[in-house]
Image 1 (spheres, rainbow, N blue to C red):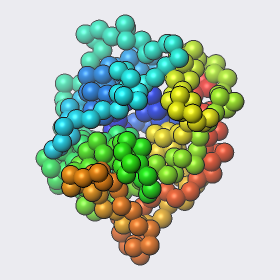
Image 2 (image 1 turned 90 degrees about the horizontal axis):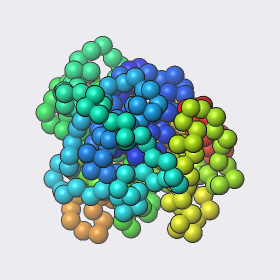
Image 3 (image 1 turned 90 degrees about the vertical axis):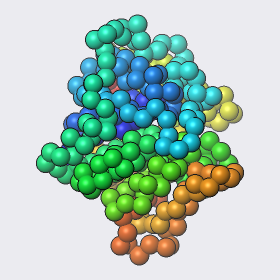
Length: 305
């Protein structure tokens, strides 16, 4: 299956891409969307990562803001870079006029990608603005998507509001558009991610070219939890990637999905009912995973990166 990644490129997005590389999953292209940080910083993160990790995929610039609402980033948690660190940052100083995204827009690039022989799988790690825009601008081409795996939503409480997970809250209208299609849609939600976490004692011994950079970025990611009085940090985007690389570790069940798009405290909430779908729908949600094996594989993907 051909693979495309749509991302708002924070640290765990980078981690997910490194995991896909670790499992030798070829990525045909990467599209960027505003989310963790404004699109300008998301783009800098992608370009600096290309330089540091020698990724070979092309990068395409996508949505600057959600379809209807004003942009809301996660900078209050992740800082101005969209990723925390204990010291070293991505090599932004290496960026020059040669480190640019492709001139073709993300939407046109995905449209062209889908026109080629498939099957086509999109792994979405941020708000779904790019995918919704693709549906609106190229509805016939979008039907050629064979699978979407999305990191987002929550069966229970949120993390950016009381009710909503960040990627859902960032553009719930886009999520509603994508979820209303017949495209097979798999969700790795907040509750699943809360099953898999790592603590200071789980930090791996890194030995690759980027060992010091990754140690600081991984530590900065863990610090998000430590600074809030928690001893361990949940693993998010890498789990979505792992569900593609090692689907055997996950249990998916069919469910129904409805999204709150009316202005209220519940805006962006994903209403998921695993009892309301008889197995004939297009929406599946991961309800369990082998947590120890998942943590081990996610952390192992960083060891030689």
